Length: 318
Image (tube, rainbow, N blue to C red; front, side, top):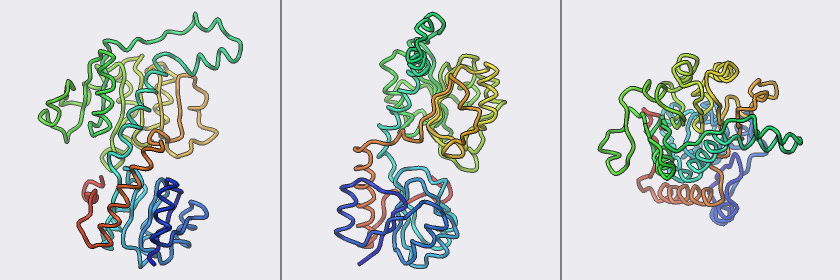
């Protein structure tokens, strides 16, 4: 019987299906050393957020396939997997709706100061209602950086608010979005300069790491709302903190940080114009079922020596 290694639990029904067909080994903890020790002679590994390092791959000679239960590949050493002819697959589009809804929720929560007002009422500070300035997003410019399936879904959800949607993505052409009302810009600075709300949706790789910092925040409007539901490493968090403290931007919604979890001594915790969630934008039972189905279909293809779906582009790492 073939062995599959899970770094974290997956959907319960998925677990039941896997256990009927193969031996399932679950990591006792998520550290690299533990995974390296316990993965041993497994042929497949499914990971959600744990690191699958080059060292793990090199020391698991029987490993035949690596599956990401999600999209981002920044914690998988794709280069070493390539060297060992091990295919890496992910589950694109499974979490699109969940992440898009989470992003829109963060935008509205920031615009209406929901978290700040909830805390105030709980502390018997009802007079705070006269001290806050809420944003109406009708007529505002929404800037989306990274126009994949998630970015497009967010644009469609927000159109009901009668907003202008701007987007920047060097890999997208106008012909790709001809059936939408999205305005594609050629220069990312247009997003920074014109947007009232900016939402970030790019993979973390060499070209995007630390792509947004002091220089970019300085270009933004001083009341802009900044959302990061991509990867924490895309943003220079110390410079984000400085921009928030110095009122260079209006607020931030972060579903991702670097590192994760955000350390207790991070100064971001001190700010009341920041909403932080624990990288849960893609979480929903429906999404987990979709992720498992995509993985299981691909695993069957691998076992039957058929062409794999969602095989990673090793040059783009995405």
